[in-house]
Image (cartoon, rainbow, N blue to C red; front, top):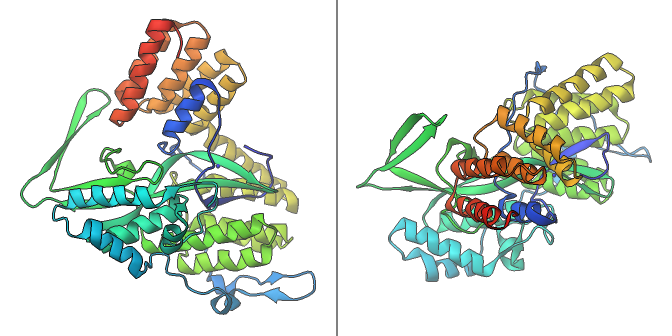
Length: 441
């Protein structure tokens, strides 16, 4: 996260470049690109392998007969504190933020301050390889880079902050001969209220009600939308990422950048470094496998892929699809047709059971003017996950093109119902009003 398909697909946590689309789809993705959540049921029997220390993995063999071993990484790749900030940043926070007693107002003020001094930019920082300090100094940053600064600044300001996963639609992008699966990262701030409680009311299947009472609120921060108020409290948005994983993602991103630039030897070092920092970072294992495979070290590639598959965290770990796809092509290269067929079947099964894959197929059919076909894909996505507002809006667009205006209106109303924020509801309500008044979006 789609460019030319390669046998080796690797993942990198980096923000997606702006997607330019025409008409209603263009407006839609400009507003909502960071708000998808990966879902789907993967029933693949994950092969558990005995944990292998990264130190025991084979060296990267060079054409000249030399090699780079995992053990050498400690000497060649320095530790980097991605959350370190200097006195200039601290002084600015002290002047503008620290003295504010109310933590909620302090959070708002900090967010406003960051919006003034740093621009969220996926082009100048395509891979997300800036520390908190570098993000501040350059005035731009991708999602990981910006989140580094936000977490560091909010902690200095006395707020309880942590990295948090940003749910996104599976997205692929290409850089040269390398195809990337991109992920997104944000941050969360917990504010505890001593003298009051917060009540959350959520509907389940339009009937049952779930009420939770808490004495704290978690505000979710996504660099693409600089406000702490855009997201409702939900388990989907509360997936905390430990600092060690954010640090490992930083090294992983540098490795991905180096591989795209044609420097596999140095990419190897950084993927090893990422795994040393977080041995359970599944897509770093997958990326290491890609480096091995491209260097024709097929046995080492297989071991890395299987290690990555073994440490995946269940069906919602988006690295699974990348790893099993890589395994399928690896076994093709090895002439192991039985295993290749098995993993290809698992890839197909994953896609068929993933509502967001169906949604992506519907969007593709829509853009190719196969509107009736796109209706089928969107309906299947809704069958698999009916509470996703994006699917209902896509179906509304498709119905509009097939001339089924009543169904289009009904679908937009469902999008309004399931939308998670005021901004999204307002967007859909304007679309509905436009459809009723002029017959178009």
